[in-house]
Structure formats: C-alpha cells, structure tokens
Image (cartoon, rainbow, N blue to C red):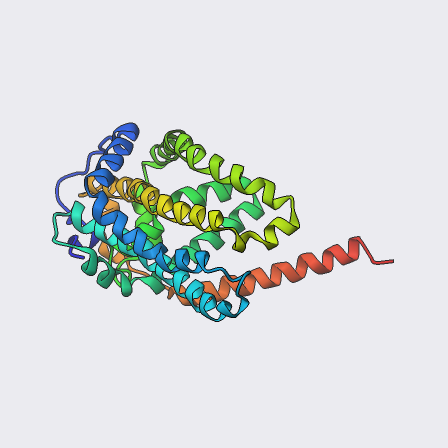
Length: 301
C-alpha cells in the first residue's frame, strides 16, 4: 500500500492537532456504513466455512466429523484472513486507492503471518506488564494498541508496527484512552442487543448436559448459528472501522512530526519471530518458577 511508507518528511515545525474523540467515532461509523457492502462481503466470506461447519449435524451423523474438522480449521484461517483483508481495504479506500473484494484478500495474504506474530507479541507484552504491575499493563495496552493496524497498513519490513504505534500515540495518550472509553459506551448497547438474545437461547441448554448433547439434532440451533454468523459479519466492519479510523486520524495529525520524520528510528531492529520465541521461553520459565514456588509454599501431603 502506497501511503508514503508511513513516514513524513521533515519540514516546518510540527504543531499538535486536535483529534476529536466523538468526531472520530462518528466518522468511523459513517466510513463503515458508506462502504458496508464490500466490508460485509469480506467478513461474511471469513465466516462462511465456520458457519457451514456449525450447521452440519455431527451429533446425528458422527461420520460427518471427517468433513467438519477440516472445515473448522479452514474457517479459522479464513476468519483471520478476512480480518486482515478488511483493514487492507479500509486503508486503500481511505487513502483514495482503488480496491475491491479480490484485491483486498490478495493484499492481505502476505500480511497474515506478520499480523499473527505482531499481535501475539503485543498480547504477550501487555500480559507481562499486567503481571508485573497493573499500571505497566495498561500503559503497554494503550501505546501498542495500534500494532494490529500498523502491521497491515505499513510495510512491516521497513517500519516496526510497535514503533509506529508508539510514535502515533505519543502526545495523544489520553486521547486514545478517551477514545477507547467512548467506543465502549457507544458499542455497549449493540453488544447487549446481540448478546442477550444469544445467551437467552443458550443459557438453558448450558445447564442441561443432555440438551448440549442433542443440540446438533435441533434444526433451530442451526438456524440460530447461521443468524449469529451473519450478524457477526454485519457488526464486525464497524469494530474494524473504529480501530482503523483512530490510526488514520493520528497518522494524519502527526504528519510532519519528529516521530514520523525519522525513518531510521522507525525501522525494526529485531525480527518479530525471534521476539515471540524469546517471550514464549520467558513465559515457560515464569510458569515453571510459579509452579515450583507454589509447591514450596503449598507442599502436597
């Protein structure tokens, strides 16, 4: 994606521009609604295999598990692919570039692995920050909240998604915090409207093991599952648009800033896969440490 590589050229002194919280949320909703057809088709294609696997009556015909297992795995991949494709489509539309259904998935294909690696890395960093102290966990979750968007919009080989996220949020930390709170308040009624009927339908079944066992035999369950998948495909464009729009607005606001003018400072210094491996090893070491400490403090009798 040609977006000036995410880096502005040094020019006149940068002046901090206001990024309105409610205005950005409103623009995100308007952007998703205006391009809803494309975004909905992208998300629906990501849900298709999972929806198909969900309506196959495996409980009635166990042999069909041969089909549902690969469908479920394929559905997970397609869902991930669609989540990357929709952000790629949003970036191209926002920056006035031609795009479409096929093009969005084509661009996204090369971004899937970097997206997975960097998102996982972000989650681990936030997790460790939360374990050590609550405040670092909150801080990391804010300054790195734009990593999943940055890795798709920018060239991850030339620009570190972590450095880009931190550079954009610098001097806008509380704007991003208020934006997150505003999004929560705005989306809560929608989440309740979709979630309450779903749990109302499933709650009685969860208390009855026999009902759970026979779920696949009830045609109504299949219908409900299809409705849930379609509803999810219809709602997700708005969630993705909210994530993308704050990124785009901060990126616009910080053009000409010192943080975006220094291309060298934004370059990745360490391979993301190496970082993930190191953090996974650290996680295992901490888990073993806590395990042995717990056994020491609470010996088995």
